[in-house]
Image (cartoon, rainbow, N blue to C red; front, side, top):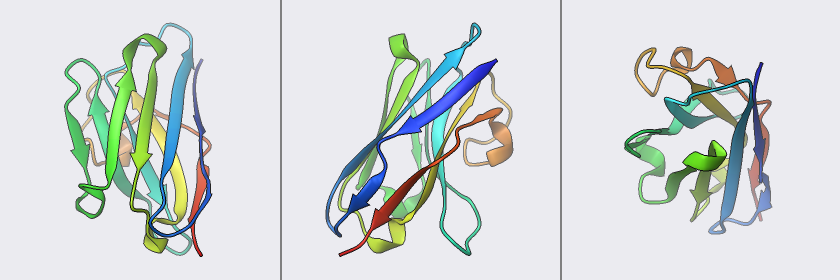
Length: 125
């Protein structure tokens, strides 16, 4: 069974930075793509960013472009999300996702087979 586990959330002041990490482990798992979604209270879940494992191609939602950077460590099956210039509207539970094959657009939650439990990111003064 494949497990996906996030770490690195917390409380940060507006303008600050956080780095999220997520490792995929378990049975032999060949990653096709990993990424991040988030959900704020009262809001629908939204796509944040994704990275294609073989090429390193990255994808971002418009609101985080220029502030967030997704990267990967292929040997460790780990994806990172560096979040800079954080704003209160970035407050949400952030979920790591992974898929062993292409199942649809990177921004669709249904394209990912494995989901983490989520990590809370709170941006507040």
